[in-house]
Image: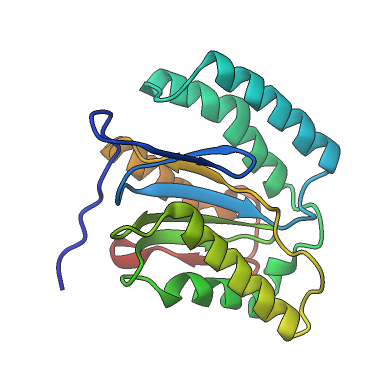
Amino acid sequence: METYTPKFFDGREEINRHRVRLPHWEQKEVLQFVTWNLGDALPVAAIKRLKFQRERWMKMHPKPWDADTESEYEKRFSDRWDRWLDCGRGSCLLKKRKASLLVANTLLHFHIARYHLDSFVVMPNHVHVLFSPLGEMPLEKIIHSWKSYSSHEMSQSGMWQGRLWMKDYWDRMIRNMDHYRHVRNYIRNNPLKANLKEGEYLLWMGEEG
């Protein structure tokens, strides 16, 4: 088995762009940090307000970004979103071990086959994943399969009825080794930052964890 080597964003290579509600950028087999949350995790009004501010800011700061612009984006939008999620609003279904294990097993199912998982944490109302898509598998199809399968299985088992996940997700391509280490440490420390107890989250740090 070949040793896993993280691949970082390269501004000289082709960038694939697509859109659900938020604009998403990807580059072949480049590490992605992705976050998505339960549909009841955040107030609708707050989501709309933040998305409006984000859209307006992005029109003034088109991608690709340098490190300073990326840092500003994270402070203005991603960090604020993460702080809201860490407050533990909504049903927090994923705090239940059966639900968090189902999500974890969903993520691990095609590890190595369709993508390489670096690390992930299943929090009470959201999920953070650091991974590299493999081959020609698009980012959006991977995430759609995770959300669709886990939603179906939770419905079948009686854990949840109706829409489980928020429709969209947040993603960031990893720029370099420092960015990679920062994100990996964020995933590892997120439960502690959110004051969670053992058993209220599920952390997987992969080969290097």
